[in-house]
Image (cartoon, rainbow, N blue to C red; front, side):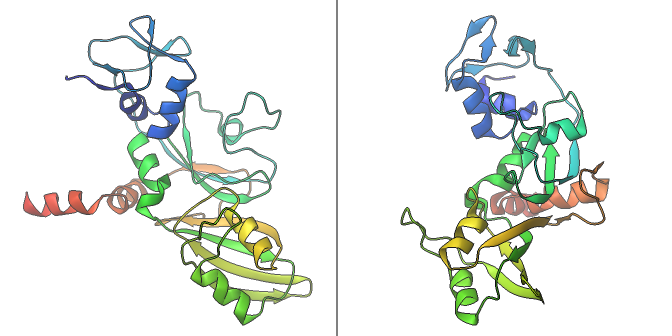
Length: 250
């Protein structure tokens, strides 16, 4: 097997997206044949000894795909400096898993947990613009102008504009309104920031779909392995146009 960048090897071994693996290397946690490496270094996984935090990565690894209904109060990422529990604590699997579709501490709903680095990268990288669907409670009654602004895209404090979004009213309550929001991007705390920006303070956020994967009847804090059919749909969904064209040619 030829040499390749170590961050790519780590992603394939289930240590998260390519960017997450780059961060692991930058933090000085990775060694090849006992020597600390730097970002951009290469290795041959069939011959070289590659360790993360002193633990040898496996040459081959079984792919894991888990749907989790994240409750409020849980972090989507492991943070050794933060006392809060994480989504990994809910699952309790020793295999390193990457949380696809991170949610902030106060948000809940669907997260895909996987060691498939390629899929994780494609579902999280903004250039792929994969859909994520949310049920959002705003503490007011929005007017048509506010909804239209959210649908078109909102200029944020840093000068960037959010991508157009699908926004529709689900139902009204005495103290607010439930909205269905479908995004093709996932900037940090985006829904809360946009809501605040246009006068629609957000009270609750629950994600119910990532691409073709739906939350379904999973209760808060529960998780399950994806079915073979769901995995197949996700793999097809995350293929690039180039990959699809190559398949047609072959």
